[in-house]
Figure 1 (cartoon, rainbow, N blue to C red):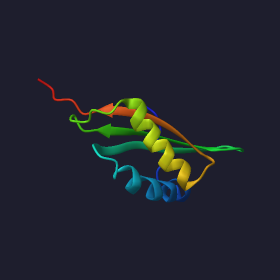
Figure 2 (cartoon, helix red, strand yellow):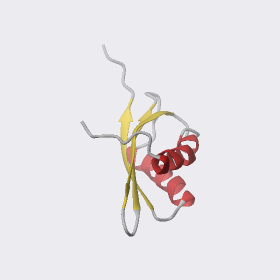
Figure 3 (spheres, rainbow, N blue to C red):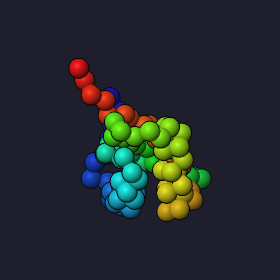
Figure 4 (cartoon, rainbow, N blue to C red):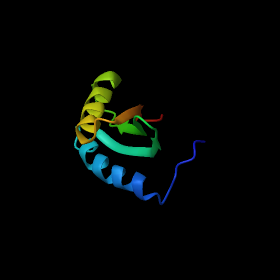
Length: 90
């Protein structure tokens, strides 16, 4: 299990900027495991995007949409995204 930092003002600020924009993407159901890793030249923004079962887009096209949104917020942000699909269990 990856540790997720809580109560970090920097992480919360970035999350509040990014989450509403990502949730506007059609078929995005939720975002989870959001974390931020600061570096000297860039900041990694790491999270999972849960997509609705009806979503027909490829993982790569979803990732590109998310990366574009994040780069528009700050070009030094590097998105590291995992796409989760919401499947029905039988």
